Image (cartoon, rainbow, N blue to C red; front, side, top):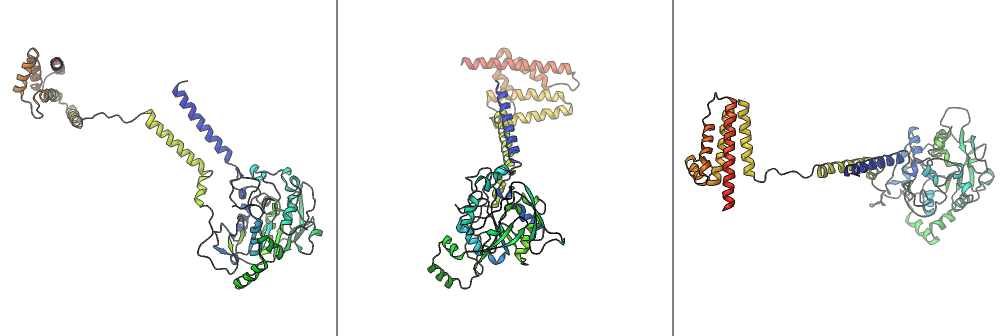
Length: 474
C-alpha cells in the first residue's frame, strides 16, 4: 500500500470516528437533571407560570429567609450514603447512586426550611437509557429498598398501595387553591402510580393531596429526637446551641413528602394534568409567599439558617461555569479545531517541507534582483539593444571582479591585458564580441541582434571554461 493510500485511510478513519462520537452523544442527556427522571424541566415550567426559581445558589450566599419552599428530589434509594455533587455525568456513573447525599444532610435540609421531599421511583439505569421500562421500577427490581428509605427518614409506617403496572388517570380529591378557574376536579396521569395507603398515615402524618387511588402528598411531623440522633447531637450540645443561637430562626417541625416523582420530573410533566398539578401544589405549599422556590439538586447544605449572618468565607463553590464549554456539543468544536490544526501542520511541514533558501549571499541576491528589474524596464520600453548592451556589461563586470578585484566600473584596457595573458587565443574574440554589443545601432534587425548576443555568449563561455582549466592546473 502506497504512502498516499495510507494517509487517505487515516484521514477517513478520523472522520468516521468524529462522526460516530457526534451521533452517539447528540441525543443523550449530560446530567441526571436533564434526563427523564431529572428536575430541570420543573424549574423552567415554574418560571413560565410566574413562580420565581432560585437557580445555582452559591455556598452560603442565601438564607432560608430568601426562599419560600425547598423541593428536594431523591433520585434513588441509595440516598443516605456517601457525599457528592449533583452534576455526575450520566454516561459514566461511578456506581448506582445518581445523586449522592448523606442522610445527615437530608435532615439538615428538612429542619432548615419547609421542604417537599420527592421520593424516588426508578433505578439508576433510567438516565443511561433515557427511556422508561417496567423492569426499571425500584419496587419491582428491589422491593425492600423504598421501605428501607422510609425507615431511614423516620416515616417507616407509610405503605404504598399496589395499583399495577399500567398508565392510570387519578382524580384529585384535595389540592388547596387551584391555579385554573375550571370547576372540574384536577386529574393526573401516572404509569404504575406510587401512592400511599391512606390507612398507613398514622398519627404523625396527614394527607395534604389525595386522589381516588390513594395519598399523593403527606404532611409528616419531623421526629426531633430521631433527627438529633441522625445529626449526632447530644442534650449538652442542645443546651449550648440554645444559648448561642437564641437570635436565630426556629427549626422546621414538619415536612411534605411526595410519593410519586413522575408528577414533577421531566418525563411526568408531559403527561395529562401533571404540569398543572405541579404549579397548583407549589402555590398551595407556598401559601402566598412570593419568595423564590428552591429546586434543590445539591448534595450539601447551601442555605444559611434563618437569622444567621452571611459569613466572610463561603463554602467550596461548585465547579466553574466555564467547564460547560468542555462538554458536548462544544467538545465537537474543539475536536474539529484540533483536526484542522493537524491538517494545516501536515500540509505545511510534511507535504511542502521547510522554506527553500534561494540565496545565501545577500549581496548576490541584491545584485541579481537589480539586474532583473532593469531588464524588465528595458523590455517594457522596447529597448532590446540597450538590454543586450547591459547584459554584456554585467558579464564583463563579473570577469573584472574575478581577476582584478574591482567592484566599480570596468577598466577595459587592464581587463584586456589580463585576459590576453591568461587566454591569448580567446581574449580578442571575447573583447570584440563585447564591443559589437556596446555599439549596436538602434535600427539593427532582431536577427542580427540575436546573432551578436549568441556570439558573445559563446565567447564568454569558452573564456570561462579555459580560465577554469587554468585554475585547476595551478
